[in-house]
Image (cartoon, rainbow, N blue to C red; front, top):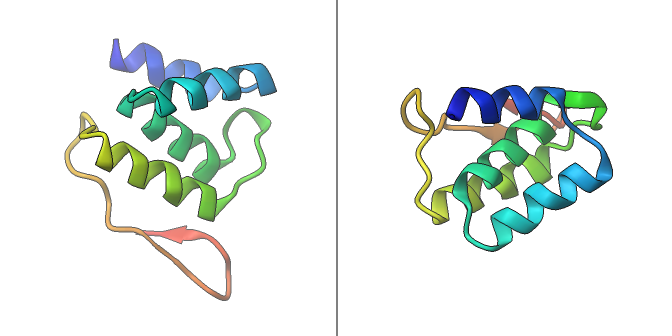
Length: 87
């Protein structure tokens, strides 16, 4: 199931799909919040990368108790000069 969700995130994203992910996250779905973080961090599916929004969604996923399947959340920070996330 997790693989399917990740595949859908890569194939995403119309505004309606982003709205559905955001609505699910706001209702307590940590996976949806994490996927939104991935989408905004990497600019998946034609979405403009937005590091600040990505961090907000990653933090929401943590708060909701979601843990990625490959381990813990990476320790990320935003670089001032590049405006991007780095491990």
